[in-house]
Length: 353
Image 1: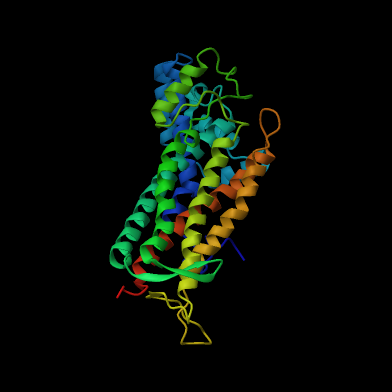
Image 2: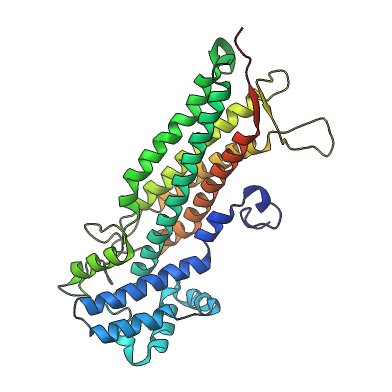
């Protein structure tokens, strides 16, 4: 069975078109080319190459269309696609090849491309978080004054308002919006360090070039390169799990509230059964729980990827490539599922008498 996010039919449940586009190979390649073009212009701006050569090289990069098979075979050989990409770009640039990639390293390219991806992903998260919070607010306006049985440890306790239950769903999501804005400068950072991370291959104007790139790419400028210090990326992954975990709580509550015999919530559009046609399963609520647990299992892997040896790790770095995109896709799907689920709520609780 292939990845559920891209599986021919399972992707109908797990997939998210917007997240797929953000994390796609063509978009990643576009970001790598964006870095290389900006880097060439930066070499001209700080005087390492002439402005003319820099501009001509950048234009060649921007018009380049490397075959993905070249990158695939290069990755087999080198463990990553950038050396093959740079060889291709230098051939395309001809006499301007010295204005391409000089002083940079593969990780500068791929990490900056990742930062550009995270910027797009953050915008998607912010939009959807806001939408879920707004929609839960609308649900609260409709049903918030109704009552349901409050339960502690899954046992009946005291009656509470529906609004009280809904607040436990929406308040964490509103906090995640604020947390996202605080965290973005630590994750959406330009990467520039050269071969060993200290910029020595670039020279005394290393920081000037980093500033140029940050401005050109509209990314944040860290105090140093982060080749082997991955706390910002790992924090971002943990944040993804926080979002899906909060939505998983919402999904778990809805599943319990929808149980026959409890009947505290009525949903439209429930899933059917091949054996029991009377059933209407709370499919999207169940999906929120599944995705929350999926991301929770991946957080430990991202913390394993924090352990980089010396100035760069191949094994720890590539572990991120395996984990982070799937976490981002799971989180995006959690949010889209929650949005749809809000539209399916027909009633909650009973009106006060």
